Amino acid sequence: MRDTIVPGGISTEELLGIAADIADALAAAHAAGVVHRDLKPENVMRMPSGRCKVLDFGLARISAAPTSEGATRSYLTSAGIVLGTVGYMAPEQLEGKPVDFRADIFAFGTLLYELATGVHPFHGSSSASTIVSIVKEEPRPLTERCRSHPGELDRIVRKCLRKNREERYQSTLDLLVDLRSLTLHPQSEHRNPLTGSGIKLPIH
Image (cartoon, rainbow, N blue to C red; front, side, top):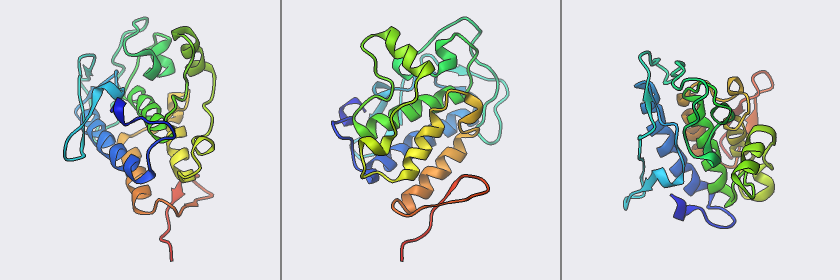
């Protein structure tokens, strides 16, 4: 997938197709109690058919208690152990805290931001500065870097990239539903004032 990240980003249509494939793979893994822990462009392969596959589960861990919604809540890494690739690790991973499926969602949000804009949301001049950015800084809104993308995509990515994992998607299936809804109506959205979620309306 690294070769798909280009200056200025890819189109919304292409991005949503890729995103749905990756989210679908993660949802299946999480439902089985598996957390990848090292999701990054190099671990996603685009097949000749155009479909994407998630590869290299070398750092994955298996939980004894997956949930029916793919929301594996068991903590899979012992405190104090840091595993993964710095630019795609969630704040809790970088701090050596126990991690669960929501660390994959953070990495997924990082990958989507890169595909959409061609720029890493937390890029630093060194590993240390990248870590500081991930833990402390908020990325520039995706739609400021690439105005052709809908605001709903920015909302989805920002929710994936919340520093506090309790504020990220609490189910990978919920994330997948939002992506598929945006695929149906990429240019039309209406925000529910009670839930804050985007409700997509058909264009007449």
